[in-house]
Image 1 (cartoon, rainbow over the protein chains, first blue to last red):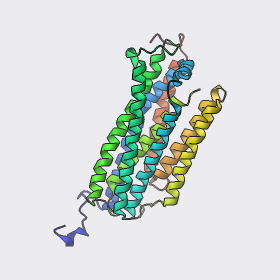
Image 2: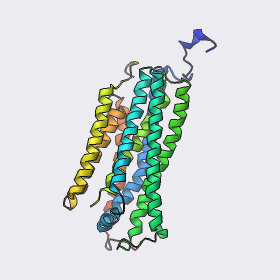
Image 3: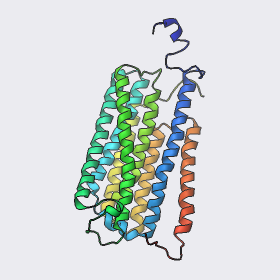
Image 4: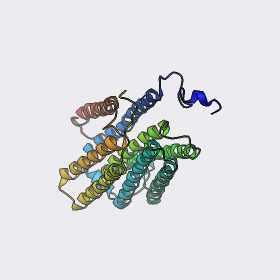
Length: 218
Length: 102
């Protein structure tokens, strides 16, 4: 800011080891995609466990799934889809230099993410009251299957790891919101919004698969 | 590095994709209540989920307009996941005593 003449040749956000903003943007995005690849493989281990146990105990998954509320699962799916839409809107707003709309869309995204976690909280506490805990802490006797705890171990691990990702996402979005309110993002520089958006969409995609795998078994 | 222009999605496109995802969610829940016979329920649910995931990846994550390298990273992650699942299933599906004691 102090040295106006040099800002055009060398923007404030550009690190010296990049040729230009475009190269820095592509590199950041590629780095995020590689991270998302590792995320897919981390969740993938749990999906593999799910597939193996479902192949072993198909009847258990049908019985235990009835303890999950399809409607709340569907509501949470819609909530996350809505939040993905608002993140995409925030990025579009940055590209069009509509600085106020970046903050508004990020604010809605944070609110929707919180709604998701609140619904998840009520789902979890409802199960805790019934004695549906993971693994050896399982005390519920409403499911006539000796391995009923396995379904809920997978449920808590997979939705729990996903919930941790949503919580981290809320933190990242709050940081983006604060910086967008300071006016840090515009069409020239919005890399953090773009790559946090990629992360958020992946969290959405993982839920798109968790929802039918746990809530839609009949 | 194809120039300086980033793809900017129109409101129409973003809302269209969001609407399609909402519609597909309603479809998959509706199909669930139809209670299709055994294998079809999961097949339909997974086809819808893959379709929804593809919509998000292509149009919200911009892979449709992006450098193809990023798409390759995503696809290779799924290839390695498929390897993990298939190689494990070769063991777990064909055991003498199929279900373990744990």
